[in-house]
Length: 174
Image (cartoon, rainbow, N blue to C red):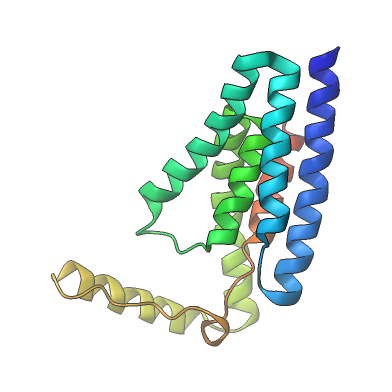
């Protein structure tokens, strides 16, 4: 019974955190530490309350798998620190297995969000050319070409993809 209550509480915190993060990201282009850090701490505490030391270890592993996954993919993906911390907080709240699924679904849905964004802003040709040049320069042994970021490059609020990926994992019962 206690495990069900803590899981329900963790899901509630995840939903509130995602809603707050998406609104903040859309309004000011930032996901704040004052949101993600306490939510991660609550997740670890709920893991301990619902499952003791193994429950706490599962929540810490949920954070760690996100961090390792982002480090492994860091050359291929450009996500901001707030995005990483948001996904780590999801892992802390829901555990290792859930974090894996949330990351996978976030990646897939993030690609779709980016495609929709590029179509909407008529930026497919420019984005493809920039990525091809950056890849050719990098693979030719040249200095890693920087792909523009920020408002001029059409920064995509990735919190929306994280929210969609996490909500999909919840809906699928992961």
